[in-house]
Image (cartoon, rainbow, N blue to C red):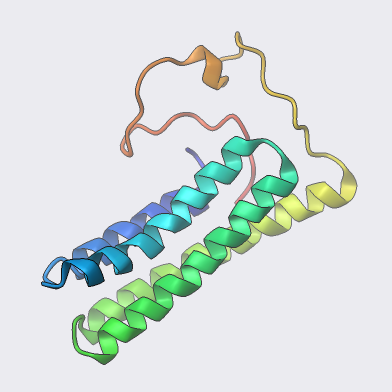
Length: 151
């Protein structure tokens, strides 16, 4: 996926995951990691829905997950499970992801206002069509975006 908000959201997940790798409490670790992982997951799911209202709803859900991420990380820093330096790195990236996400939301809200959103799926023969690709994708080789938005 080429969306910068999604890419940087994945970076946020990785940063949080690494910061809490030493936390012994499995349940706490799982809860803390779920929030930043939900950011990119909701961006991706919304993008794949094709319907503008659904896409926007998933982006707003991703924004909520960003708030949850920050709240959980603040809690970890307050009880000494991550350092002030780790918190600062996460907070800076959190702000970057939030700004990119807000930019994407503004762009899509603008498309909704002027009616320029196209819900039609691309043709199967089009090189960017998900139908034309059958190989498996991974986080290091994500699928090409079929929607080209500025984020």
